[in-house]
Figure 1 (cartoon, rainbow, N blue to C red):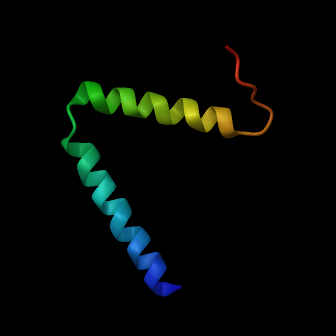
Figure 2: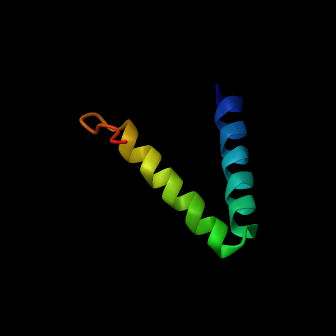
Length: 49
């Protein structure tokens, strides 16, 4: 289990570094998509089309 936690931490660090290397307009788009995804997965929120 400790190995899994270390691997997850390493992956998260790699994702952060990759995100920082993206152009700012792409970072903003990714942040918006993540925010929308988080809101949609919270209980009580309904997807409106």
